[in-house]
Structures are given as structure tokens and as C-alpha cells.
Length: 178
Image (cartoon, rainbow, N blue to C red; front, side):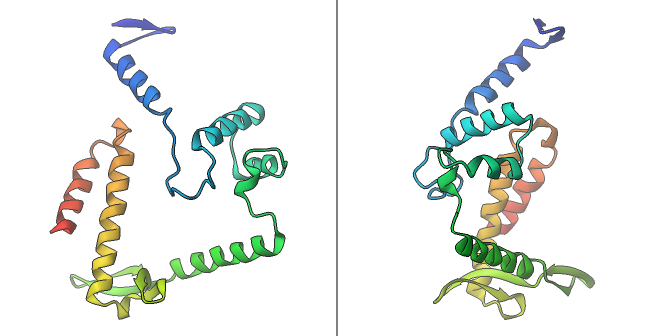
């Protein structure tokens, strides 16, 4: 055991934590074009500055700082009020359609599922009722679900507290991949 701070901590755990912290310094945008050419690491530095000034990091605080034209966050926001209102209403429309569920009978038991899925068609990505999904649409939903489960699996890998869930996610991914 090695001494760390005021208590004793296993040295191998300190090395593990050090490696994780070191690896957390390589930041990127989940959606590659989202950052409008701004390095994600610069945004993280700004978030760290904001957190140190205000003692927390909330969307309200971030918006308040981003209102300053010289703030690196400023260009990531839509400042035309008409366009911002339209974008907000589009997000509201997404929230509305994503919050409609339908009762289906699965294995003899009723359960609620989302009434619409996002699929790609001739007109691009759109919502489609689960009652109208084609075989191709269902394949796209399956593929997207596998992608999402892989992302979740990767996310929980960092937390040892969630290790019991990892085999279940792997089994779900394997089942969907067949």
C-alpha cells in the first residue's frame, strides 16, 4: 500500500486512476461537425473556467457566459432570435413525437413502446409509425440499436461500479447482431 493524501490507497488503484485521468485529456466532439471548427479541448477549458468561477456548470450559466461575444462558446449558439425560436420549436416537435407510446402485445403481455422510429427514406431521415415499418426500416432500427448499445457499453466501461451490466449489454449486442 502507498500513502496518498490522508489515507492509504492501493498503489495499483492510484496508477489505474492516473491512467484514466491522463486519458481523459483527449477531447473530441461526439458529432464531428458540431463544434463549428472549434477544438473540443478549448471548450472543455472554458467549461473548467466557468465551473471554477461559478462553482458549478449548468446550461443556464453556460448560456450566460456565451452571450458575451468574445466568449469561445458564443459562435456555438444561434443568436438570431427568430431562427433560435424555430430551432427550439423543432426540438419541441422531436420531444413530442418521441414521447408518444403505443401499447403492443409481446409474448402475451402488454407493454408500451415508442410509437415512432426515425428511419431513412427517399426524403431523408423522418419519423415513421412502428405499425408501418418495413423490413428495411426494422433493419435500420436494429443497426441503430446496436450502435447505441455499443456506445453505452463503451461508456460504462469507465465505471467499475457498472461492471455487472457489461456482460448483459454484450449479450444484447450479440443477440441483435445475429
